Amino acid sequence: MVDGNTSDTLRHVLHELLHVVFSELVLGKLDDTLEEVLIVAFDHYLHDYVQASKPRRLKWEALIAQKLKESESLLDDVPLEEQVVRKDRG
Ligand SMILES: [Zn+2]
Image (cartoon, rainbow, N blue to C red):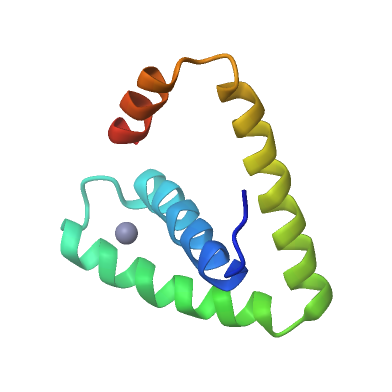
């Protein structure tokens, strides 16, 4: 569920997506601290870029809400204990 602070949710999603992209591009080439610093810089830039356009922001928020809804429905059949274990690993 997307909470009231969608701006923070958007920033977290952008940050984690950048980790996925960076892990493929620079795996083993940068130290973890430098990679994190670069990702934080990019996520600030991308967050500002998305926020600068209302249609763009609404599109991202709708897509994030849709993905969260899909993942919640997938977890409906999973016992709570297993959901906790999965979240700990993530
Ligand atoms: Zn990070």
